[in-house]
Length: 344
View 1 (cartoon, rainbow, N blue to C red):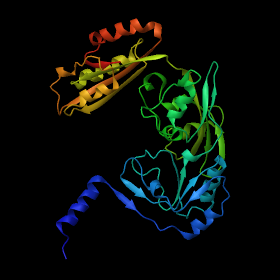
View 2 (view 1 turned 30 degrees about the vertical axis):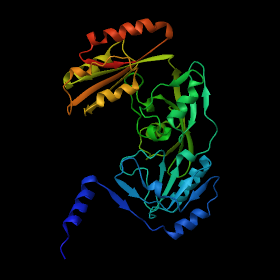
View 3 (view 1 turned 135 degrees about the vertical axis):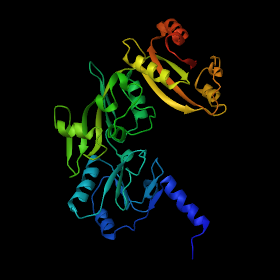
View 4 (view 1 turned 90 degrees about the vertical axis):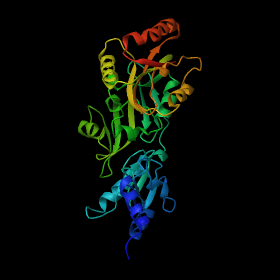
């Protein structure tokens, strides 16, 4: 019997969107061995389907179990258990933060998922002084770090645009944002790490102590260990911030201005560029982020359906500098070759 047109269509959609779903029958020996492990937290064996998804929505690998760690020792015990099964074992383990991987990197087919957000460690510790820093769990969200450090008038030097990501997750990649041109990515602003290695050992490392492991784990995509704690450099948080977006229809002007601003001695504190495809009303919908009284100059573009380029910039300032900031915003169009969209 020949395949129907519908069957061909389903196959086409599967390959076109890259979706792969794999269901593994849990190894009873694996499940029994995990039941015997002594942990402060607990394992889940039945409700594990959410751990078979990630942000990319391209792959779905069902794990055998999910560890909800009650301590760093739980993670070390579990990883050591996997390691001791030997090189011929197919049992794998993966750390999962908020599940923002794209191709199933935070999944483990028939293996063990470590739910890092469940890690119960000591409360975040903020240390002020000449070189301020915060100690936080690898499973902590950046938004929570920001809220805690704000209480002390401090903030991380560099963070990602989307703050609902875990510390361990972004430090295992790089953590790039609009502050990167000034402070480097997030991995350039870490003073110390606590890591569980692939053998299940717990190490504290820094540029001076176990430095090879420290530099390998930062941006190492989780292949050199699981980050369970990070000491992150802080700086004084700004009192006020001027937020400016400028819009381009010409890519060359867009990139030239971005390079000029990044290399200038006196410039903004945050600079980031991105690309949009304008749809009907999308520019006006941006108004929700700004003061309704702000002018809209984007009407100079006949841009519906076109690719546009946007520079997003911020400048930190104190309340007594408000008049200077107003003047800077008003004259920005004269020294940037673009059309200002709005400022706030």
